[in-house]
Image (cartoon, rainbow over all chains, first blue to last red; front, side, top):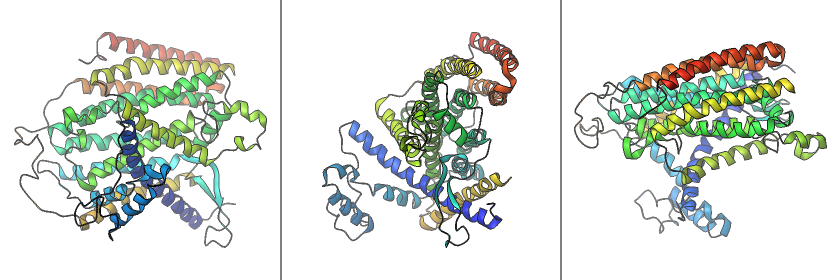
Length: 395
Length: 117
């Protein structure tokens, strides 16, 4: 049934609201998870209490307080007495973080190029959000609106915003725009640390973009499509058995590049505190800093979604094309049904891997970073593409 | 065309979001001017020179090489999509293209453009 323009707009708006709410809720939760996971790796407790009320830090004694954070803290404290739930102690800290960032003074240094300085974090965050329009969280509809629903009644609510046939190209193109935010922000600060950090960051991101794009070519070659749904379905369920080790290797190369693309440990040279204070966003405060922060974590979600979609079996149960064997059991079996839960499970697992790696590995040196990118990953991906082409040619 | 309309909508919302949040924080946040606070950060000392000085030429080299390899991946995408149709002709053609590229790659490697010290 073709939709009218009003229906189209209303439906898209509902999807966008859900999508942005998902991303913007997940980001603070990742930061909380990051604190907790790293703490547990280092045999600490991490954040267990949200700082007292609004009248000073009397943490620990204020859990019966009438203030919002104090009350939440108290609730969480009692929840924490249940053995498994104790990891959620201190959860309200993410609300406190958001409030703090929102109410922090916003400083534009005097030497800075004011317009560019204000604009560049927005560029980063806009590109990081817009990219999600081509990501499909499930191949079909999540649910159908009941008939009594105004305007969009009876229409299916899709788990993707649009199903364009150049999905992957769109994602790569828009996510590359984010680097402008970093470079321009670094330049506009007119300060030495941000400039050096921004240069490093830009060189790193564009260097690793080459093997990243090339490693994504492997699923493109295997499926002959750029559509997110199509690629996710075919790499999961219709690959030649020879392609399974290929996807496996491709996944590791892609993930390595993804870590570098998002400026994460072990490739977080741009924010090497020991050398560059905090890299390109040294001069940024308050909300503008949190835009960069939001963009970085939204990009993490994006690269995890791409890895889950194209290498880890997308919306299906098994990764690396192993689902192909399961498909013989018949399409009606529950484990052969695509589901948003499988996809989100994989994305969350990959986000956990991001944190896990941060807690485990030390930082690379800059020359090692460039070395790995240009001398190893690019030749490896070229070989991978060649093998993928051969397999596609045979199969 | 219909598939791209929601993207435009998301773009509009994504553009308005930072503006809205920034305006909101503008209403909530304090704003006290102080000369020291608004000066450029340089480990606590007074900034001596302009930050926009000469920097290492390697960054420029990296950008040029990125351009080459990015154009390469732009060429690879259509081929990867039409592999079945182009068949052996495409495979050989792409092999020649990649060989030429690898030649250049070997050249920049031997010239030491990929080595940082």
